[in-house]
Image 1 (tube, rainbow, N blue to C red):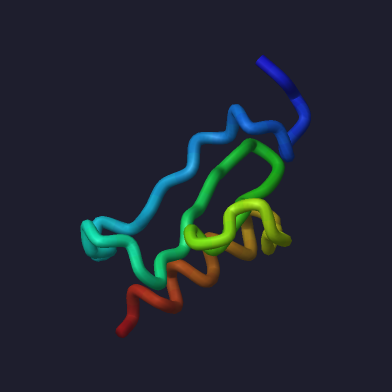
Image 2: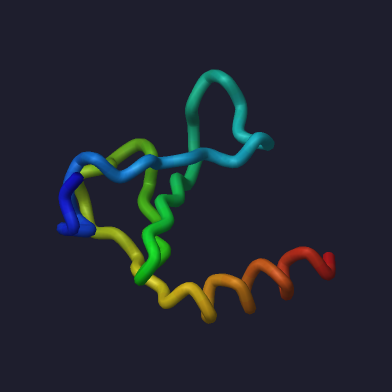
Length: 65
């Protein structure tokens, strides 16, 4: 298993709220050091990268409604 966090072995996940036809979806991949977010329509383009603590704070905020 590669330790390079940009390697293609990352497991990318879409939200269960995403439609089956694709469209405007974000994908998320988590490693021990970073949470990566990319556009599913253009996966080869730049990604956003967050420390796990910042991602957790975002998820807590989003869950509040």
